[in-house]
Length: 203
Image 1 (cartoon, rainbow, N blue to C red):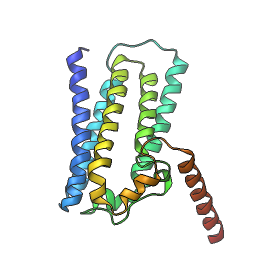
Image 2: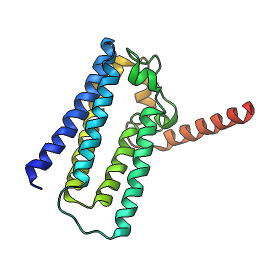
Image 3: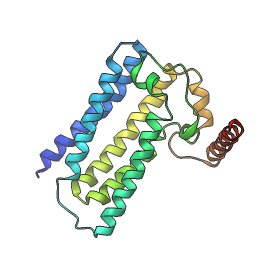
Image 4: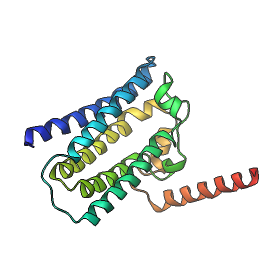
């Protein structure tokens, strides 16, 4: 496959990811009805399409089969926790379906570790995709998509989320953006232990 084709697929992914992310925030702030589910459903479909295109096209690196298998296992783990961060840790209905902004800043679960936990898991998934697919297209996509995803969350963190969620400035002071530190790891473990204790008492 030619390089312009790769550029086309990369552009589809990033334009969709960027505009879906930013417009989802805009739609939430402006309380526009029905557009939130339409945006994330159409956006998710295009993201999956772009992922398939880079995985099954391009020049192969001829990696060992065991390394391909390990890569897909890492990809599966990364995607699982990426989706968990976005669709389980966050209240699904309020975040992606209901009109307006969710009524609460989520600081629990993976959001106790970092402010944007989807990004580290996404980068892990992209590394796994590169090894699993074993193609130059997958490598280019992994690097470019990861860097641009970081750019997107930087924009959201700097200029958007402070307007959407009361208390976000304090959250920025107490929780790292992308890489967990000792304090955030300790807070996450403490929170998990407390949650397990509550669940045990409930039983």
